[in-house]
Image 1 (cartoon, rainbow, N blue to C red):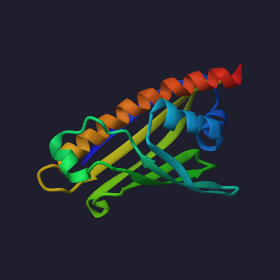
Image 2: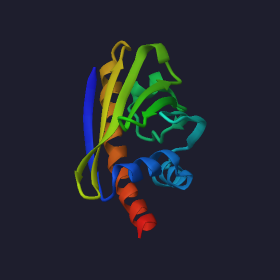
Image 3: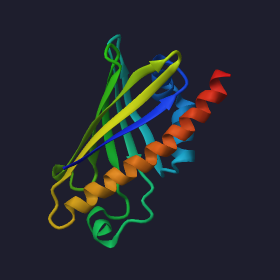
Amino acid sequence: MLSVRIQHEFDCDDDTLWQVCLFDEEYSRRLYLETLRFPVWRLKEQRVTDTTVVRIVEIQPLLDDLSAPIRSVVGERFGYIEHGTFDRASKRYEFKMVPNVLPEKANITGSMYTERIGDRRVRRVVETRVEVNVFAVGRMIEKRTIDDAKASHEKIARFTRKYLAEKLT
């Protein structure tokens, strides 16, 4: 199993950041389809209550440079369903990603939360754990998943800062 902790800082309060990340349709469309260039990003379900937000999202990331051993396992149309729950009280988003290839062999989970670091300044932390039990290539897939998470979250942070600047000024 591999894990990663990714942090980025934003010039807003945590409520604003969560509002944009969970409820702003324009943000999601521009982030996933235009910035990250994912072939598929689709909100399949969202249930909002006073205490939680439950989201189910279908995602097909852009994977144009997979190694031959990984491609032989995941194929050409790799994707996953993200099951996430945001707890309004703790301001914490817990997620599980279920791949469309060998879902019983992969366990990808994590959490995202914010830490107040100043007046109208917040740090977003994403912690992800990846375990893939596939003979000979499991560790390679775990490493690639972590590397992709790091690269994606760098792009996400840059886009989010730009988007917040557009909307908050």
